[in-house]
Amino acid sequence: MGSGRNRESLRRRAGVFRFPGESASYDHRLQLRHGTLRGVEPTSDATCWTLIRGAAAGRSDDRSVFGRRYAEPVRAFFAARWRFSVNRQEVEDALQEVFLECFRRGGVLDRVDADRPGGFRAFLYGVCRNVAMRTESGRKKARDRGIDDLRVDLDRVECDETSLSRAFDRGWAKTIVREAAQRHEELARAAGREHLQRLELLRMRFGDGLPVREIAARLGKEDKDAIHRELRRARLEFRNALQEIVAYHQPTASAGDVERECERLQALLD
Image (cartoon, rainbow, N blue to C red; front, side, top):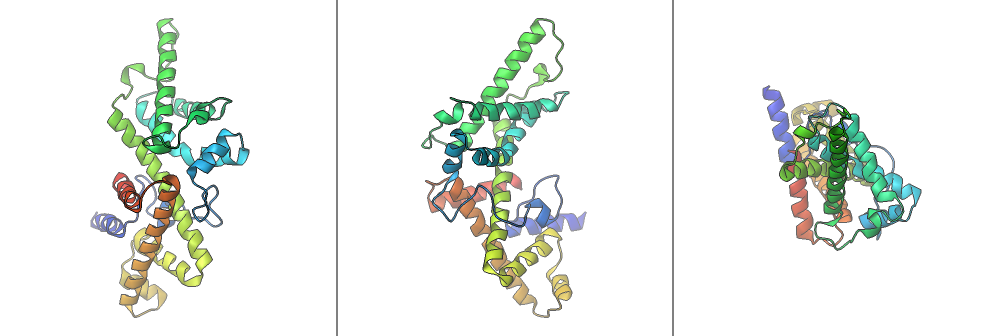
């Protein structure tokens, strides 16, 4: 038990995010993968609105990326709202219904406003809420007609907006952090061997929970202070990648707003 608490404390101090219920491996939790980060171009003029408008225009690649990117918060919303339901498939059906609302001709993406308060996050949350209420209304009508439908327990629907918003935001935070982790590795690979070595140090320290002395022993190094310095640099590099991704999703945000959003994401996933 003590080891687990120490590892969690290390993660908080490092600014490394832990997804509840997932593996303690840094590589798995942040889903670091080889290759480029599809749909995210933080070094170009593209923003999240580039992707959203492409999806609204019917571009298949943009719609594919859109679906992968926003599935997590949408699924989290419905899982929280209908957590007492018997048939969990209803969550997946609602997820598909949200995307149908987005992609159909004259759908909701055609009406999205980039200047809307709360950005696309608030807009997508509203779409989820509308789909939920429409689904529940249909189930209620069926029940009133004597049709037995157990897919949604209408008597135990979570209606507390604070709880639902937090569930959605946690799903949103997981998505952003995964993209930041991918961006971190992408930048490390482009920068070369030393950056990749620092990335591996980060995995060993905060993923595997290894103390610096053991990392030093495994690497055959005696200078523990040098490892501490490299870990600090690796943490900063991840933070910079996270800031890039947050700025991509909030293109009008100030530097201060981006930093505050990074802190909010960490608080959501702690």
